[in-house]
Image (cartoon, rainbow, N blue to C red):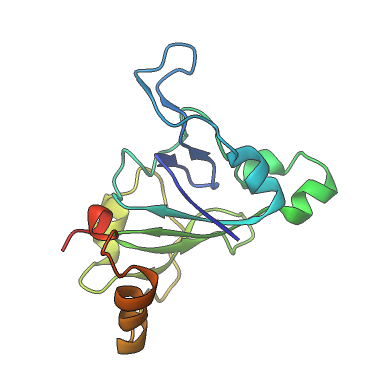
Amino acid sequence: HVVMGASQIDARGNQNLAAIGDWRRPRAQLLGLRGAPGNLVNHVTSYWVPNHSPRTFVPSVDVVSGPGYDRVAGLSAAVRANHEVRRVVSNLGVFDFANDERRMQVVSVHPGVTVDQVVEATGFELVLPEVVDETPRPTDEELRLIREVIDPRGLRRAEFGG
């Protein structure tokens, strides 16, 4: 299972971490393709997007670094069998593609966040289930593990604050 970032992500799970704007003359050059294309067709992948906004959750990514369900649909059965974008986690909620259309849907919203806030911060139409759960808060033991075992130096604060 690979967890990657995304500078842009669209409704079908296409991810961009290469450039903003036309790839021939980008307005901003980012990390590049790196191993994203290979990772996505060989490993279950989830994305962490720390700043959920219409600039990151876009109708169509500027450059496809990691292919989504629409792009993989035309590839071989072997590639399709190994491709899974399992989750997208942002600072507002958790999303997946577990529907017939393979479009991004809301799984849960984080405590204090409303579905309306998520919809407003997304540049495309999300699939909304009838009931949207609240993301469970971490347990005391999970917090202890994060603070004492996984990240005792507090490096997470560079991205998460506090």
